Length: 87
Picture 1: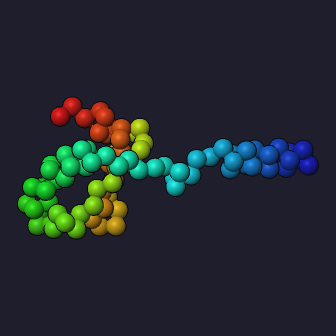
Picture 2 (picture 1 turned 30 degrees about the horizontal axis):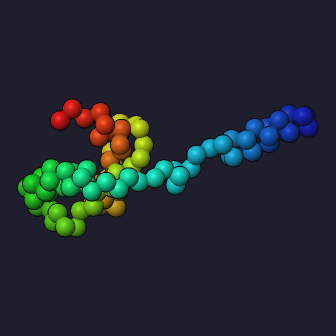
Picture 3 (picture 1 turned 180 degrees about the vertical axis):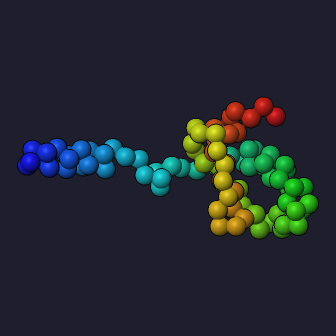
């Protein structure tokens, strides 16, 4: 039984050390990309009745094909989505 407990604890410690927390994911700051996204989003936000100045876009350094909104008017776009977009 003690060997099993040691094995479980060792596995949990190894996973905790090697796991990459979400806070380790960084953001990309690129003026050209941010301005391009802003140019695309402004007419959409205005048509939706939202204030473009209050809307924030963040580019997440992540290969996955994903984007999400948090906190109301904060959009997070993964670099994987940008790189895979055709137009």
